Image 1 (spheres, rainbow, N blue to C red):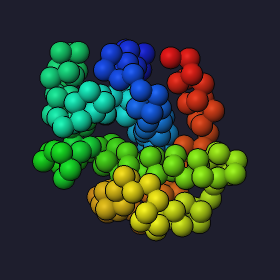
Image 2: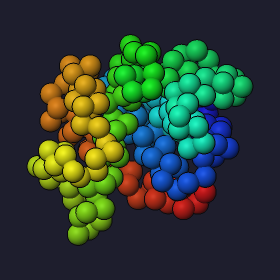
Image 3: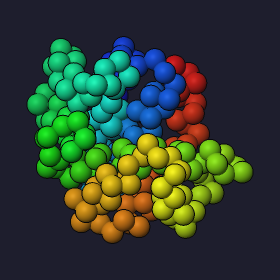
Length: 190
């Protein structure tokens, strides 16, 4: 599945700007992580999985990581893609554990991209481009801030990857920075 095909599929089931922005953000983070971790030849696959990971959430939040199996099968996705999407909800709405490093990166960065996005909205600049690790950690530690972004899942993701929490926070923040403007433009064009 190409990025364009995946985006068309996501748009079939997602209309809200928030969900589309999240899908595109996670996709771009996954692509950058693939390249940084030595999986450049799989960067397109990582990006597609990041794009479609919440395909069922907007319309079927109570069936998240379950309904997607039907939707992705109908779209012709292979088992590897479906497994990667299903396991990003491990421990929350799925009992399928992440196995491949890509799946662990998706698990770890899904919630974290939301937290970083919320942090950006609180900054005078409204942007992540001038955000540093110290600022992110301060908001991460504030349990009342962006309470819907599970710190436990983020920490569990870092542990799965064998990374220190600061490493995950820093890598994800740095992966998001270069694409902030293009994400805004891409969502506006939809």
